[in-house]
Image (cartoon, rainbow over all chains, first blue to last red; front, side, top):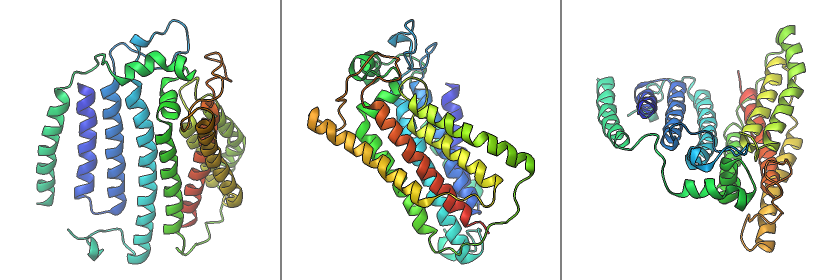
Length: 113
Length: 226
C-alpha cells in the first residue's frame, strides 16, 4: 500500500513542477520525476509478498515464489522511452534558449497560458 | 493563485488516482499472462531470466519498435541541434586525479557494460542496461579530457550493423520458423552462456546499438555547451 502512495505522490510532485514552475529546465525535470513515479507504480503492481526476482538461477527457485515479470519488462521499455523524451526535450530547451536568450516561460511570449 | 489552482487540480486527480490503486490488492499472487511466462520460460525460450525472455522473445517485436524510438530520438536530437553555433569547449582538462582515474576506469566500465549485455539471459541486465553503462564510461572520458572526441563514422556504422542484425535475425526466423523473430536456434542447456537460441544474439546487438546511440546523444549535448 505504502508503495502505491509513494509512487503516486512522486507523480503528483512531478506534475506540480510541470504546472507551476517557470523555468523550462525545471519543467523537464518534472517530466522526468513523473516518469520515475510511473515506473515505481508499475513495479509495485507486480510485487508479490515474500517472492524473489523472476530469474531461475538455481534449482531451488520455483515459479510460484516469483514476482510478476510482465510489469518489469514493460518498465524496461518505459525507461528507455522516458530517456528519449528527456533527451529531445532538453534539445528543444537548448534551441529555445538560443532563440530567446532566456529559460523563463513568461518571457517566451508564445508559450503563455 | 496559479499555485492554488494547480494544487487543487492535483489534489482531485491524486484522490481519484489513489482510490483506484488502493482498491487493488497489494502483494498478492495474480493468475494471468505472467504465470504462463514464469512456468514456460525455460521450456519455450531457454532463457532463465524471465524478464529477458519477455522483452526479447515474447514481446520481441515491441522491442524492435522501442529500439526504433531510441534511434529516432537520437537522430531527432541531432537534427534539432544541427545548426546551433558550435562553440569550442573549454580547453582546460580536469584535475590529474580525475584524468588518471578515468583512464584506468574507462576500459573497465566498457567491460562491465559488455558483461551485462552478454549475460542478459542469465543475470539481471541486458542490452539496454549494458548500453547505458557503456555510455556512462564515454561520459566519464568526455568530462575528464576536453579533447576526447567520439568517432561519429564508427558509431553510425556500429549502430547500423546492430540494427541490421536485429532485423536479419527476425527475418531468418520468418523463413525458418514461420513467424517474425521466432527462436530458430537450438535452446541448449539452461544457465549456460551459450543457450536460449537467438536471445543473446539480439541482446548483444541491442547493447551495441543503445551504447552507440546514447554516446551520440551525449556528444550532441556536450558540443552545444556555451
